[in-house]
Image (cartoon, rainbow, N blue to C red; front, side, top):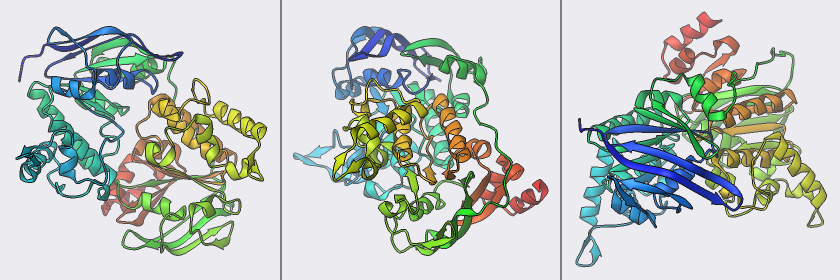
Length: 512
């Protein structure tokens, strides 16, 4: 174990974007050989802080010290040269290139003025092995990898740069449980090698397992630093949100057994990915999709929304058979379906366009007449959505990409609520957002259900399924293996069902 010392310090850091204060006299100290957790709501200033650390943006004022000497990073390359490397939540990979090309994209090894492919592949293999992802082939195209494997490539890319300071911004949010375990082992090994690690996550269990030190940010300033384990989760959350923390999940209503299904799915199949899935969804009901990541949950949502071709089976809406062959057809009034996608950056938003344009996009056919948008009607709906979801934006005409991650996710949800959907499909909507915003989304889902929406909710977080859902369908290998209702929805039952263990049936029998 290497001796710990102050490797990197930030003092009096301030940054403004127009009239918006992102950071105000912020400070942070990272020690070699320790993992430092950075906590705070989206919009608290965490992203701006690490962008300054990694050379993406420059501070308006303040100093940075590395090994006790003042440093400035005018570019990410300068930060990398100094040994500061960041793994951002939004992946920086180029989908059309191979894994090896991506890992070495900035500085590939050369020979006789040409890229040395053999050396590049060897370096990529070593980086992947160090990341615990040696099963990923270095010549595979990134676009052919699922999101969780792409995240592992991103981490391998960072390690290939041999950092002294490694920053991880929600780096496990897209990973499977097995990959998270591998990453934890890597991070603990890097800590023992003397690296300073700055770890940003909204998953409190990860902070409890990994962190040595913690700093909480709120409204652009650090409000507390403390040794990990000395504060309760409730204390930390209250520091993050600046108010007393109450139960995250709203109470569930009593089930109404005689309601007819709004959505009835019978024997839905798709290639070798989905197998004879049947379930019903009633108005006012939140039905969860559980199971280990990658068991067909996302495919099911895409199949229902008309994204996938050659889907077999029967889908009924209000008791009438429908054939949904496109998202346009799914969202039309006869069906009234909305899909909140997994990746807000690439699937949910057009980042260079304004907040107003993103909010209106899905409802243009309802807002326009003879090709002209009714500005008054548009503004009324937008004002309603901004208030309903408490979206924080300087004004409606700023690019949506300038908003915090939590507010971007609210815009994705609000965009579809502009259409007043009857059936809402959600693909892991709280991934990578803070506890305060999560709580607001939980309350919103229950409110939508209470107003008559039928909600199908996939989450990789068992606590969300337990806290939010009236019923949970657990998928395994593309099929529904268990249906848990009411008090049957426990962590033990969810995990046993997700692993397809024989005891899952016994757990369900005991619960009932």
